[in-house]
Amino acid sequence: MNIYQGLVPFGTALFLASSLTAVPGYSQDAGNKDEACIPLAKQYPDLGTDQSVSANKEFATSWGSFELPGGPCGYAAAAEHYNALLEDAKSRGGPTPHTLATLPDWSGHWGTDNSVGEVTLAGINSTREGMAARLTSEAREVFFKDLEMWEATTAIDPISMCLPPNFPRWITVYSYREHFLTPEKTLLGAEMMNEFRRIFTDGRPHPSDEWLTNEWLGYSIGFWDEDVLTIWTKGIKEGILTRGMPRQTNELEVIERWRRVDPIEDDALGRIEIEITLYDPTFVEPWHTVAAFYKEDDRTPELKEQVWPHLWSCVEGSRWYMTEEGVISEYAPGEKPDITSPDYWFNENYVHK
Image (cartoon, rainbow, N blue to C red; front, side, top):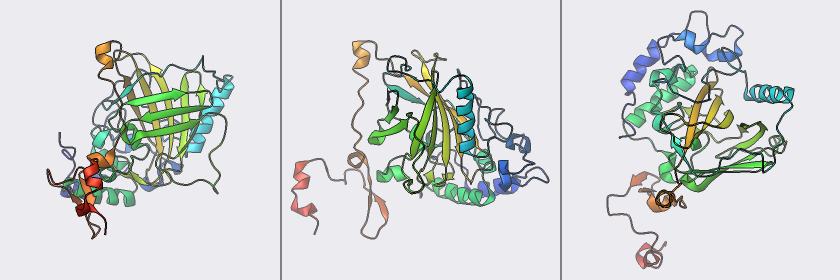
């Protein structure tokens, strides 16, 4: 499938911009900061589904809820959301002080399930008019211009240049996942770009303003509430949610709740569902959805033969390069040299002068 297929042409985008008329008396750019906030679902009852104003279909989950946390318009900020979850856990005797023996079993390899939620490859589960409704007017204008370039296939996907997927795009990319749990730190790994997120559950706060920088995967802290891992991530680089979806700023903060749940539909061995809530100043209300990973079946020698994660060598597979003029170009079929061969490394025709 062409990943650009279904993107809204620019002329259509302009039509959408004019057709997104909010409820009278409501300032869309105010979002949940406005005391008179009206949820997007009520402003645009004809958009999306009952689960999400920007979704193009209903999604089945075993545990994860599509209800926006914090009330009709959500929490005002990620900090408020995280602290509410933490206080709720404390009211029940938490956070849970796990040992290696009591931590949930997330062993094995996990695959990406893009049939759940909107944080998916190329934004295939979201409608463009619904995503536009989620944005402030300024961000919406940028989004429509970006859509024009995606439609014309003239936009540059940073992954094509071997830059790593930033977070939360990390959730959407196709690759095996491996997770390693300890009482004080959880590693959440993706085969693509060999990226591991580090979730500290030892009670530390985020880095102070003096030390906080903007990184591809941000800085993540969390706690266990029985078998649910709650995560708060901040300090993320600006970028795009994924191809064909809006941009995110370096002020984006994300709250997640991870839980292994029973199988659903075609899942044979269960799944991990993730409630995700995105807080960005370009969103008029928090963007909440659910994602999932399914456990790969490797119970027989034949199946084990098929489940082998590899070191991801992006430069080896990428067809893109930058010319001396700074223009992004693409190798024609058969044109790219075999950069993994020692004969290339010691070929005077390719020596940098």
